[in-house]
Amino acid sequence: MKKLLKGKINSFFETATEQLFLGDSFELLKKVKPESIDMIFADPPYFLSNGGVTCKSGKMLSVNKAEWDMGKDLVTKHAFNRKWIHWCKKALKINGTIWISGTLHNIYSIGMALEQENFKILNNITWQKTNPPPNLGCRCFTHSTETILWAKKNEKKAKHQFNYKLMKSLNNNKQMKDVWKGSLTKPSEKKEGRHPTQKPEYLLEKIILATSQENDIILDPFCGSGTTGVVAKKNHRNFIGFDKEEEYLQISKKRLEKVAYNFKKDLS
Image (cartoon, rainbow, N blue to C red; front, side):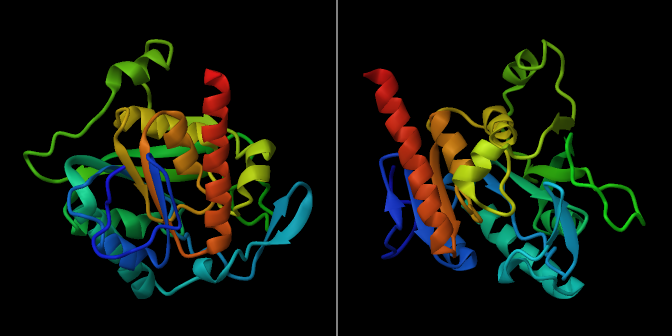
């Protein structure tokens, strides 16, 4: 894969089809060559770490994940979202699109930031989790959904990719709706990824197949333990990922190498 970042920046891991970079996502996004990315998937901080508790496998656990997820005031949170979305827009090709996941804690800020940065929101996908953890406080409904916003550049010449026929064929030859049902990340994937906000592979696969082609370049500016890259590689896309935690990039590297190994084993 060609060099996508301007200047002398060493990759953490690089092959012919993927690049991982260790560092601050804002600074790395600024260095991405303009209009070089076909699709972006971003799972930014939800700012959920507020000292509360949740239920996991029948046990009460703290919701606190790490410093990067600590709660912020409204102004700080929105400035954060608008800044990284601004640089994502510069990186996207004219026909490229961006997908951003979130919950009620951050998605309204993200939606407003997209419009402020002159994106057009194409869909509001509701991911309905079939096995969400219970609401321990019993003072509101169980939180069983997340929102994924899909947007393109709000320009007349922007003709975004959407593989309509493929999505229809994957949905019993019916138009696919904007509510996607499925389980939380399964244990076998969690064992490999070990990230507190890890998304299931089936969710990323649907997104990637819907809005990109083979050999397209997919960027994840908060790539964590690399699920986006794993799914991109399995579906013959190129991938570039950023994260500031070396621990998770090591996991990403290991997972990508495993996919490559399985490819070679299948060919032998």
